[in-house]
Length: 220
Image (cartoon, rainbow, N blue to C red):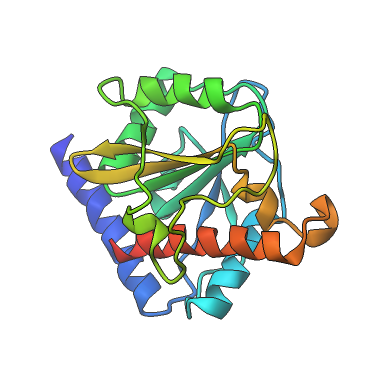
């Protein structure tokens, strides 16, 4: 198990090096899961985020965004994996072990609540890290202060239940391995403007915060 984690960490570090060197071989991925939830929601989100990062951070991430099953060994090919949806999420025992190895080995998971995923995502991530709880990150956390500054934390993109947006994290061995935007819906803000009819100012805030997440992940 220790050897697997060391190999995984090496893979992630190599991807991070390639990212900093502007290699187009770096890909990010959308997480596919079981349970009936629409893991495929927001199809234009990640391509738009990648394009924004390439144009504004000077990165060269492939615009060919991958889809990866939570239980697949292919997950280790991607230093950043995004999860979203509105409904149920179910991780099998194999999924849990695979995702834990990925995250403890250097990978990163971003979860975006597209309204309705909260109780399911929290339940399944508790299987992955039974010893951890999601903690709200302080507004001073580095993830809010990369190229773009968000001194008040997450921007509010979409109204769900009239609650303020919150950014939660799972911190393993001193490292943020999962960032969860709740009552914010960053993924909707990354979509084509024609989908949700968001103002350009709102979309820009969402994309800037997304770029901060990407920059934070690859600079660690």
